[in-house]
Each structure stands twice: as structure tokens, then as C-alpha cells.
Image (tube, rainbow, N blue to C red; front, side, top):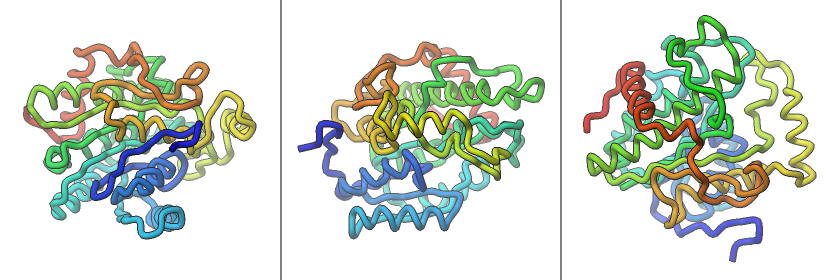
Length: 312
């Protein structure tokens, strides 16, 4: 029986699960939960040493867990393609894909090697290209694809006319824009799967609020110190007030990806006060994620920006 603050997880023995952003924080806890349920993990990471350390920690919790650590930089479309080519060469179906990795609020505007604004590239375009490249393996596994959005997708808008934020860079607005685009992609993925018979279950999750590295010091991203926000979140989390922990925040994505009753095109997040923490439950899609025309526009724009097209 699960603990009162936990959820049951189906037996995943023999299933292959890919989790982005699993080297720390919420992504690590998601991966650890799936390993405990018997899944074979693929951990795509930018920092190999950090990935191997995460794999070792998971094996400490679940001895004998099957884990592959592979290189992936979501900010590089070339890296995404190379990573996908490696999995396609393996030929093994993917049963679960949890698109969890992300970056948040670099203090200055940064562009990737492909010319895209960093948050839009990592949070959305890299994941779009990943799913598009891996579609044959996802179809073979009739995969559950869960896209981790954020409460930030419930405010702001997509900066359609200036996706690189060249005219006026606002870190939080750019973050919200990237997460709205990503959420619309997840909904459109389910629509397209239904129309084309791909057999996928695409849904969304959000972790509520929890202390992770998203707002911690990131010298490589131009943020030398922890933000005031993450200090407050850590204080609240440590005392069990309002917000969650990385372990509890992982449950929404785990539930969305594995629960038999979780449905495609729906969103799952913490059911506590203002959805900041608590056990996962289905929630109404954020208003900004409900437009079918916006979802189609995001998909078509993403194909153009990544150079990866998916035929119906």
C-alpha cells in the first residue's frame, strides 16, 4: 500500500522509460520512482559525470536497476538528432517518455548555437525535435508521453512576433512563453496521434512549486547566486508549508505517465492549495493551452524552426 503522501505505481518491468532532466531535482525523483517500479531507464544528460552520479544514486535505492546514461544537449538540434539516431539504431521501443528538462530565467538574453532564445529552445523546441525524431519508437511502444509544464504556463503569452526576444528580453515572460508553447505542443501531439492512429497517449503534468536548481545559482547561465525566490521556497518546503519537495513534486509526472486512468490531452498536477503541493490529480487545462488554432500554429512553427517535419 502506498503511504498517505504517495501514489501506487503499476509494475513497469520490461518497459523502457526515457526521462529528460533526470540528473537532479524533480527529474531525478521521477526516474528513481520508475526504476523502483521495474522500468529500464534512459537518462539523456548534458553533463555525463552528473548523469552517472544520478544513475549510481538510483541503483543505491533500487539495486540492479537497468539504466543507460547518454549524452543529449536540448539546446542543440544537432545533439538531439544524434541522440535520437542512437536510440533508433538500438531499435527498442520506448514505452514512456517524460519530457521534464528545462531552464528558467537566465538573467540576460542568450541564444543557442541554432539561433533560438535559450528557454524556448530547451523547454520546447528541443523536446519537439526529440519526440519527432523518436516517433517510430514511440509508436512501437504505444508510448505514454508526458510533458512537464509549469504554473507559469497559466500567465503571459507566446511572443509570436519576436521568439528570440531581440527587442525586449524579459526572463519570466520568455519562460512563460516557452512553457505555453510546450503545453500546446503536448495537446496537439494527442490530436495528431488520434488523427493518424499513432497510438500515443500525450498528456501534461506540472510539479507545483518545489525547490530545485531551476532558480538556484547557475554560473554558466549568468546567475552567480541563488535567487531570493528559491531561498523562500526551500524554507517553506523544509517546513512542509504550502509547497512540495522534489520527491512529492515528481508524483504528478509519474501519475500522468503511468496511471491507467490518466488520459491523453489532459493535465495533472498537485491538488493542494492553489496547486502548489500535494498529491496529483487531474486539473483543467490552463486557459492558454486550450486554443486548437494556437496548438496547430505552434506545431507548424516548430517544424519550421527545427527542420523536423512529422507527416500525418
